[in-house]
Length: 123
Image (tube, rainbow, N blue to C red; front, side):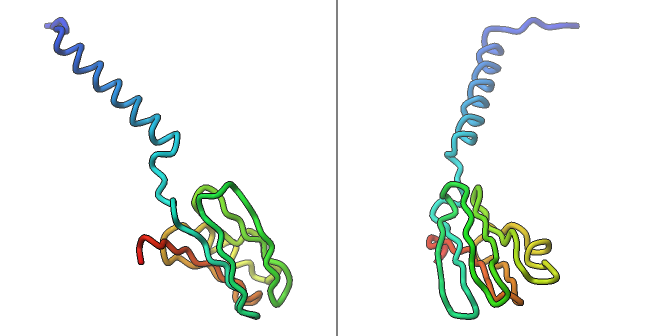
């Protein structure tokens, strides 16, 4: 037996649809930015140089000179990684991949380059 939708049913369905659209829009335009305030620390283990890049910045890449040559560091969408390195095994590129959570690290030991995520709010 089919029942007709009553006025109250239609109002509830409409409210659920409107709230769903609002929630979807809020996520898409960036109200939910878990990486806001976080940054990646880039350490050169050979000479002790340190650089910081915010994770909330636009997509960017930097070159870091290590013992074997230049490592390419990429920051994109709240994550960081070693995208290319002159080391022979490429463990830093293929195993570590993207890092994004407070305390996570990615290291290229042969080239002496290390990335670490830090969140000042977690300290």
